[in-house]
Length: 346
Ligand SMILES: [Ca+2]
Image (cartoon, rainbow, N blue to C red; front, side):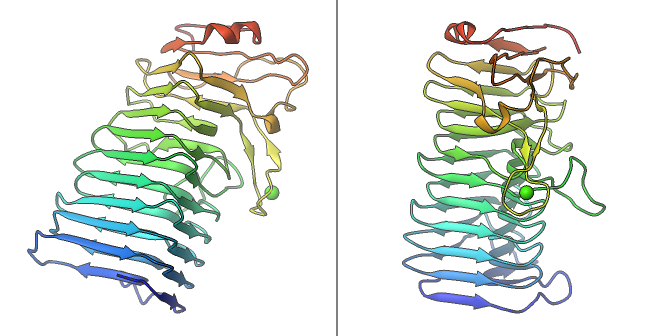
C-alpha cells in the first residue's frame, strides 16, 4: 500500500529486473492467495527511468492480482517501456484493476502503457478515473489473457487515452501499436464505455493479430477514432442510446500532442459475421477535425472483411458506409447522410 509519495529515479537493472514504485514479485512460489497493490489517499508514485513502472506485480500462482488506485492517488511514469500499472499473473491467475474517480494513471514514455494487464486468467478493469499514455506507441489499457477473456468498464467522465505513432507500421521490435484500448485474449473481451475513449493516433479500440476471442463493445459514452480488429473474431459494436462514435483518423505523427495528419478513417470490425449496431438515440458522425479532409466524395478504400469506412466533406456531409457484416443504422441519420450500403463486397 502506498499512501504517501514514492519517487523512483533509477533505470531498471538487467532484464527481468524492472524497477517500480510499488512492487509485488513472487516467482516460482506455490502461493495461490489473492495479492493486492493499493495506492490511496493523496499517494503519488513518480517513476523516471527505463522500464521503471509505477506499480507492478509479477506472480506465478496467485489466484488474483489486484490493483486499486483510490481517492486522489496519482501514478506517473516518464521512461521508455515504463507502464503505469504492470501486472503479470501467470498460470491461470486473474488480474483486476480499479481506478476511482479522482485517481489517475499516466505513462509518458515511448512504448509505455497506462495499464498493462497480462493474465493467465480473466482480466477485469473498472475505470472511473483517468488511464492514459502519451508516448510513441503508447497504449491506454492493454488487456491480455492466455486462457480467458477480459471485461473493461469505463464510467461516465472517465478517460482512456493512448499515444501516437508516425505512420501505420510498427518500428522493428515494437510490440504494440498506439491505441486507447487494446485486447489480446483467448476468449471474449467486453468493453462497456460510458466515458471518453480517444486521443493520440485515433486507434480507439483494437486487438492484436493473435487475439482469438471475440470483442464486444457497448458504447453509451464517446469513442473518437476508429476500431481495428483482426479478421478472426466475430465482433460486435453496439453504439447505444446516448453514445457517440466520432469517426476520425487525425494522427499526431510527431508526438507534440497536436494532431497534424488527416487520414481516411477506416474501421475494421473483423470477420464477416461481425456487426455494428447504431441504436436509436446513438450518433455516428465525422469528428470535427476530420470533416475537412475531403472536398468531395472519393472511392472507398477496401478494407478487410466486414470493414467499413466513413468519409465525407464538411460541405455536403456525405457519408459512405460499407459493411459486409450486419449494419443497423438509425433512421434519423438518413436525413443527413447519403448511405451506400454495399453488402458482400470487398
Ligand atoms: Ca503533431
